[in-house]
Amino acid sequence: MILKSQVEWALHCCAILAGLPEGRYLSTKALAELHGLPKEYLSKALQSLSQASLVETTLGPSGGYRLAKTPSDINFLEIVEAVEGKARSFTCTNIRENNPCRPAGYCDSKPCAVARIMWEADEAWRDTLRRVRLSDLVGTLSEEVPADIWRSTFEWVLKRAG
Amino acid sequence: MILKSQVEWALHCCAILAGLPEGRYLSTKALAELHGLPKEYLSKALQSLSQASLVETTLGPSGGYRLAKTPSDINFLEIVEAVEGKARSFTCTNIRENNPCRPAGYCDSKPCAVARIMWEADEAWRDTLRRVRLSDLVGTLSEEVPADIWRSTFEWVLKRAG
DNA sequence: GGAATTAAGGATATATCATATCCGAAAGCA
DNA sequence: TGCTTTCGGATATGATATATCCTTAATTCC
Ligand code: FES
Ligand code: FES
Image (tube, rainbow over all chains, first blue to last red; front, side, top):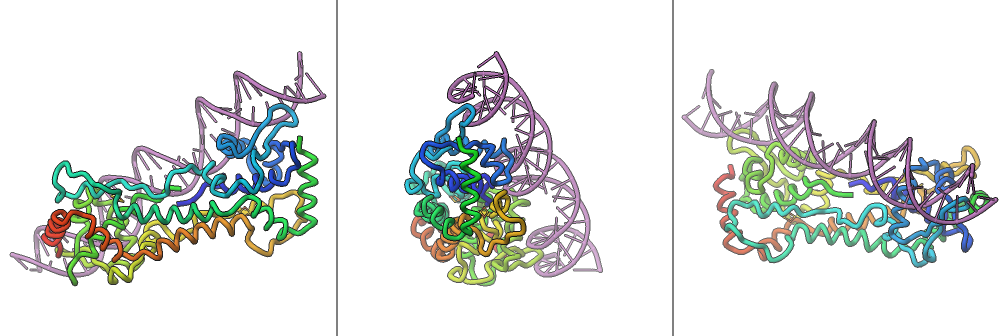
């Protein structure tokens, strides 16, 4: 059970976009260079964010991506689910129905106990992610990343933002 | 991020083994028939449980599997990790190191903020599973599965247990 | 002792999915 | 008009999950 690397990419990109001044856009090319990622493939992750209405785009030169909401209105779960999908990590294939001792045609009233427990754990994972806002990440980063790197990174970004 | 179906299989098998009288073994063949699963492949899942010391085995006719501990000493996480592995669902590939604005040779002091948050969610998932004991599952099942099916299933099992 | 049965593990095949690249279309800018 | 950008489709490749087969060693039963 491994999340795709696109999840990491999307989170880092959102953190950068969160620092973008109002009304500016940043292109896939710039985001790919900044993180050392394959531009074409990163583009798929950004498209997922776009379809989830987390970012807005504009075309043409000086086009690119910007956040569609304020960083404090975006939580981790939204970003993760945008690229990873909303499906639960555990799927019940109903093998209890194969029990040869069950009367033919018997129909279960509830989802089985095994699945309910696994889904509860899944929900705990989602809850944790739901509670962390993008603005929280930006806050932590701005404290932890050395000030000169932090500053020069955004100078680098602004030079490329349309 | 989808768990393998072996996880479901292992959980169901453990639930059955938990109902086995002291000292009896149940074969892969019986467990596969009971759940309608491919015997050879289910065998791999049971081998994983064996390697994790959750079950004990014996060879020869009347051989098979039994729990290595009491059901109240086995939690869900042990079973899940036995077949799914203990790796975290999120892996940090350190793309922050690719930032062209970082001075060459700069070394981060901490794991990055993104990873710490993702790992926290992962830990919440694991905590939930850790808190559920196999005996809890058996308790729920014995309440929810209709009494006649429950009874005839274990008659079926006992007929095949060595 | 010999035949049958079982778990363990290696080898292999297949399907599905993650990763990655390429291209054409549509939209915006100079 | 020409350039740049997002978007979506098509395609290729690699890794992993799923599944089967076969050999070996241990155990039981006759
Ligand atoms: S029947 Fe297996 S988890 Fe529902
Ligand atoms: S550098 Fe990306 S999660 Fe650590």
